[in-house]
Image (cartoon, rainbow, N blue to C red; front, side):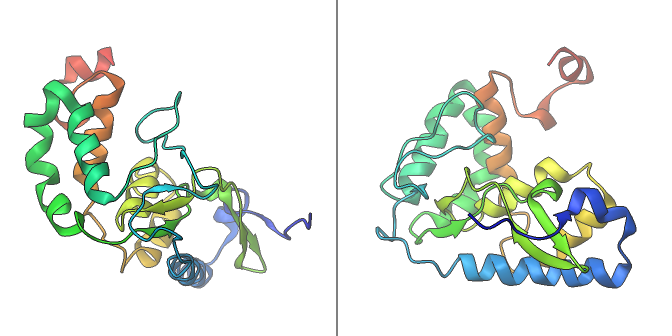
Length: 199
């Protein structure tokens, strides 16, 4: 196994110039576009890179996600697991569901974060931690890296803004809210201040 050169973006982000931040955003955009061209042996199937179940911390930390025949089946599963909270979630996901219900899947890293991006000479030298990767709905990369990093370094939010410009920005917000219900509480934005403190 060859070790990739560089340090994580998390380690060097405070030392980078604005120009380097833009370069890194463009590099990441190129990488993500190339990933999406990796063919799925079963074009409609939602599944992990290893050919089976897949890890989705957005939905749960303790179990792997099953394989889904297509994006529509994944959406139906989301509806089923939201249970009593579906009336709160439905208005948020309707447009995304309708747009992608019958679309092919694309190869996705699934955990784009500063600690998983290696930097050498102000450019991306590699991406690490592929356990969440697989063929997913078009919007999946977006919700897996934007929401967890909303409170991250401003420079990384700029990297994501550049990198994800063509990848359905904002379309996965309702899916994120649906995922929150699998932790046995209502979507975060619907909770009162007291409920947020409780959870």
